[in-house]
Image 1 (cartoon, rainbow, N blue to C red):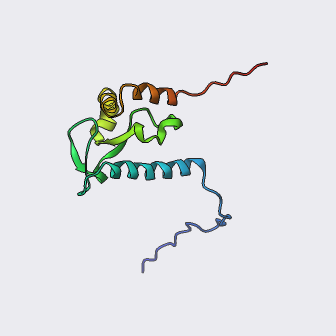
Image 2 (tube, helix red, strand yellow):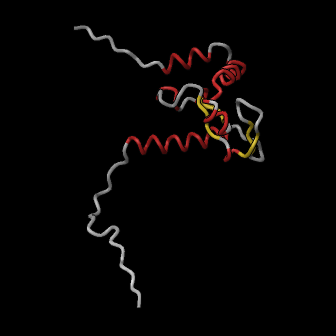
Image 3 (spheres, rainbow, N blue to C red):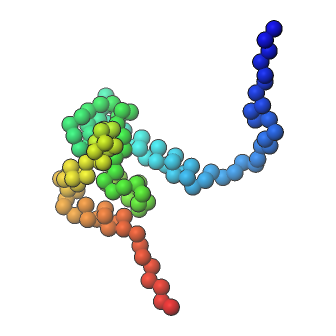
Length: 130
């Protein structure tokens, strides 16, 4: 008769008190929810969305939330003007198609939007008087 060993996974570990979520986990959840919001915002009544930088159209679940200014900059990370639905190809393989993204933003918001988003993303430098 063949017997299987029982897994010891989880044994010996003590449950810790409920710790507050880390900043990383909170940011990840905020990114997920904001992505859902952006993609659904631009969807039609059937749930289809057109990529902001190319003519590709598919269901909002199949597209991504593309950023004009990188997500690295927290000041513009959750700015609705900075984000639009993009297909995987444009967002990942073509690095967000920044020139096309900029032109489409200018058509929607005017010529100053690009400079405004870049200015927001620029880190603030504190001037310390010693």
